[in-house]
Image (cartoon, rainbow, N blue to C red; front, side):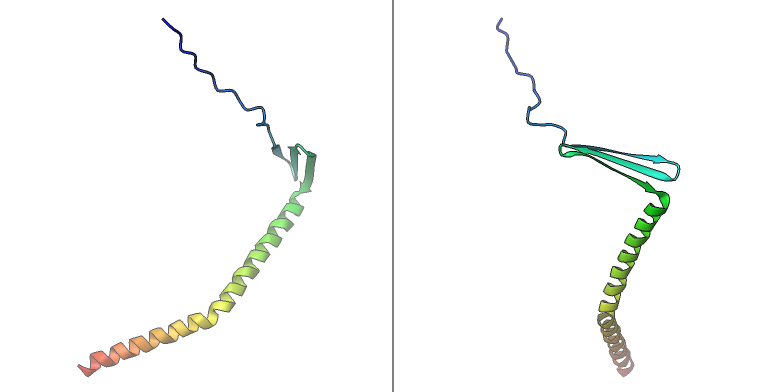
Length: 97
């Protein structure tokens, strides 16, 4: 009986790990390390610095939401006026019957 040869899947030699990272929390510090083909980088941040970063990002988000809300205010007011006019017209139509 003939053997059927089926090649096994071999990983491509061009595929390789591009980056890996780790984050370690030690008490009030967070250590982040990232290794890439270009080299190794890392940061050490205190909890206070992380809180400041989060607070800054949250403030930016709130500012964007506030600006969006303020820019849409005239449109919302017009919609409310249109709704009020529709309700008034409907009430007049009901009373006219």
